[in-house]
Image (cartoon, rainbow, N blue to C red; front, side):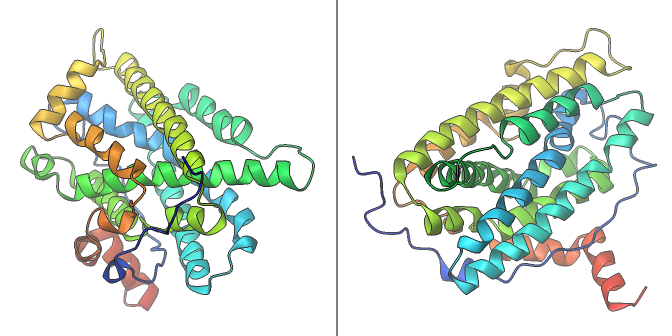
Length: 304
């Protein structure tokens, strides 16, 4: 099996738009601990995003600043700059939820300290000789980001279509944060994969780093959900199980197990391109109606 793509996967041209960061802000004082009423498990499973994303997206930005000089295509370079701006804003927005959780009796520090170690130490820069070794480590991380972005786009597309959250009375501020973020993930879903294809594109590396990223995400997510359920001050003997996840997926309050499994062969297909996943039109439409995104645009134009 060849290590390289015989031909580059074809993107859907109509799904590409220029990217820009939106300087959003959210007010959390009226958001309850269980922002999905009567469902602490779904609340805390989604809350894991606030634990993982600040450090993870800072890491994305750090790696992409290193790879930027290797990008020779001007359109892709502009996309990466837009991607960096959006990811930096995502990190900040989720980071601002953590003090709110702490005020409600859920101190996330023990878990976030471990996540920080993972991204800053285990996946951070290494003292390697210049040349092949240092390039290998950069390419490994670029490929891993492409795999992770497959799942952030998957989650973004899911939350944009998760009408069950609305029907169950999810807190509107939290829902706007999730959907603003999800819409931007759909907007920029092709960037990480195209960067990987531009600077490397090896299929074996793509498959290997997918396995690493997927395994790490499953491990970290179940561990984060368990951490929240066990430390929720309103619960007695709170637990997080795969059975709960599967049940919530069937109910529509979390992604379904089947949908997640079906996403795997799509990413591993040699013809895969992220532009065929999700809808840019839907993402842009949500961003045009998002209270936080609209407020950011008004502030940018000086109309508020």
